[in-house]
Image 1: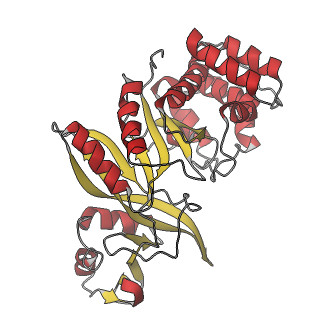
Image 2 (image 1 turned 180 degrees about the vertical axis):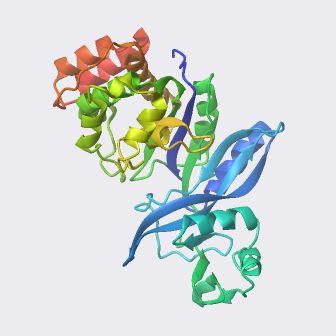
Length: 370
């Protein structure tokens, strides 16, 4: 296959077979690299049914694979959207827990002060010490920390049955040999019997440096606004994926304001900062407008999960070509979203700057899509 030429981080959602966990995959990968595994806290959020608290924020247990030189190879972490494949009637396992709070700042404090190697019964002890209170042990192994007025700080609770099985593989940014890097990770997953989850997806995080131009940004929005639904059908977006969706039309209006392309990038960030952008959509632009340290990326979220590297690389190449088209094309005008038509897809694929072998892959897929 042709090489990719963009720095990309990959996120691939998998499911461990019964009796195994994401830790087992991390250890198998570490063995291949002669590296080691480091247990970590990994932040997650999920909708809350408690009035006045729209989200519960979590720290779940994940595993970093580190090579002998100290470089990160991959993270194997939980993803709370993966639910359908799990038997929640199974008994919780004592070494698997999560930490919950209604305030991300408090969870960040936990990450800074608590030891992810600690047991659930002891992990919040440093937080209780900070607030000069004691751990409160509740039913089912739950451990709570509150301040001296009784306001909750955080709770450590055992995971529901089989919650150790979901495994999202998260690579660091890869700038060369993308196929080879993914091949080793996915080979290990297949060898252990990992499968594709019911809600499974693959996300690509493209380094956003080349996208920091008002015209490029506007081009990208207009391209994806026009072809977004076509792309989802072409790549076979999993209909059971959650946290997808289109942008608010206000974004399209703002980037096509006559003065938009005359702004500085700093002004663009401020201008678009008025929008309530969310990462939970088909194409996540939030990290460009509200940069997160070490995650200045454009994220494409529409792709299904795969256990083989070939479709992952072909899909990344398709998105890379769209980004290169946004970068190199003159101003692209907004067009109403187009419905699926083979001739429309063929025309679009033929204007993209993509290698011929990848183009043929997608032309063949387009011809087979009903």
